[in-house]
Length: 203
Length: 85
Figure 1 (tube, chains in turn red, brown):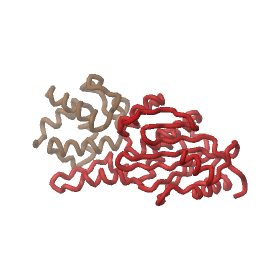
Figure 2 (cartoon, helix red, strand yellow; figure 1 turned 60 degrees about the vertical axis):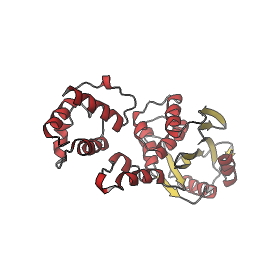
Figure 3 (cartoon, chains in turn orange, red; figure 1 turned 60 degrees about the horizontal axis):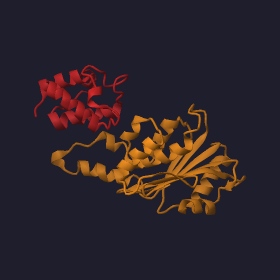
Figure 4 (cartoon, helix red, strand yellow; figure 1 turned 90 degrees about the vertical axis):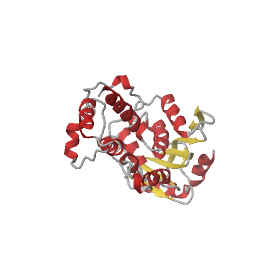
């Protein structure tokens, strides 16, 4: 790694609660994700009807990323790479899609569900909304991997593939979910190290 | 025919997750794609599945869809003339 990089902002979504830079942004206790996501969308003042067509993983990722990117000028001119990962891949939607095709007598596969049977689609949704024509990669690990985020984001910045990197751990399966999304930049105060990433992830 | 149009509006709003659209917002001759309801290509595929599942109509030629899915009016007319269930 040639330079030091910094975590400039971060967002976590878990258990019907959204925190942004360590402060509570929105909470809806004991609310299933479908309703929680809808309420959070309204609370954040987002106006993007396509949100309601997304699968759960994309909604989760979109809500977290939107908080961090909403003040970015949406002209496609910014240079923010996306680096996302999780453990369950797109399993939540894969199971739903499988359920829709399991009965050969009632075989009506849904195109709208099928398009979300890949985990990286959530980054596509973020890129479309924020007009990001940038590097993006989605990895699947057994567990949260702060060393990977620290190293891979640094490589993107060292090699000038991006000016900033939006890193995200976005996990969703059967209404159990956690999103931890943060921005890495060349200037800031909290150094982008595996230890700091892990601390924020657990906070 | 009026009942079918109403049914189609309800189905389209529900199946395509048009969260902010009410039945009364959809006029019979409004364009479903483009400047109208703003449906996209995936929505078109969902409508083709719906035609098969709910009305027993298989659209073999996707080009047919352009005329059929022009509006609620055109959909209702085609369904009433071709439905098998």
